[in-house]
Image (cartoon, rainbow, N blue to C red; front, side, top):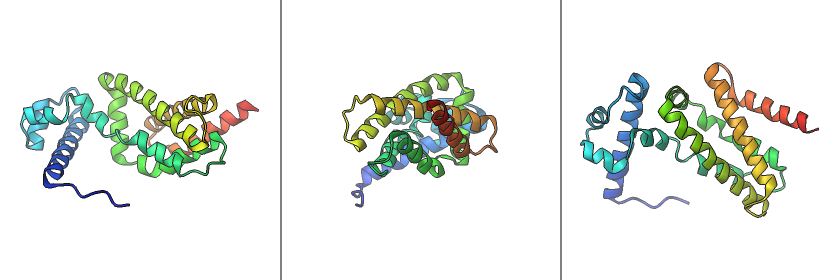
Length: 194
């Protein structure tokens, strides 16, 4: 199904949003989050300060907008898994399916920026809570279970914990392959559950 075509106004708005986001991230990665001002971002994106605030309320919002689609993408990956797949396998395989889209030099730079910036780290923790809720609902929906199903909630919580550990390992050693670490973490969990 092809998405509907956007009108000129919507296209211009999307282009401006993308330009602000791209220029801000470039500056944050080059100079650091705290060292980059809103005025510098507006100038680099060729918009006024006021226009920038029409798109983003804060610098933090710009950073987190780069990851805004992740919960929905994860839910879509769950929806593509076989419904009869065990919960833990379903969530592990869905996350593995997403690895190629997540592990780019840009995503590494963003993860490092968040990790090294206290103002961003706190907001990142809240993001994980949202992802966990979306993931639990997606698992329940795929399995035809109630949204409050305990098994789905435990699988989602566990998967998010493994995802956090995997990102920490990736940042500690960029040469490390996150999918290998993630698989090892899921395997360790299965060993403990025996």
